[in-house]
Image (cartoon, rainbow, N blue to C red; front, side, top):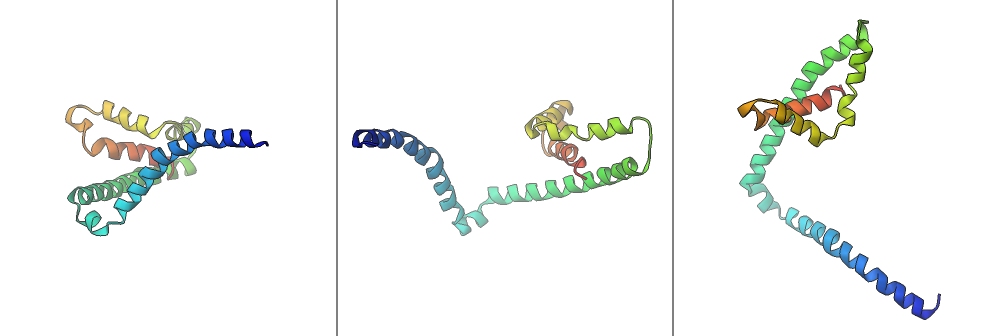
Length: 133
């Protein structure tokens, strides 16, 4: 390439590089910087509450998933019944639905006060994970 084309190409690269630097690299570095402040992270009450909620919700989701999934798997593997192929096909539904859609669907289906809090989250996790068991 000749010199004018090289200079023009370099100028055209500046805008995308600046865009990536401002909207991708800078937020990532800011997040990393905040994450390495261990004392602030460990003493943050909001973070502690979030970690506790996540822990017990995940444990409950896992237990309920296993309680439903293991017997269902055993029945599907050991018994031949009418509609077995349909049930097996329906177990694939969670794999084709976006997680957000499943969560919003269960939130919309549950009545009144049950549509908020941890219940829709646990039910959605169980629905999504039973097929994995």
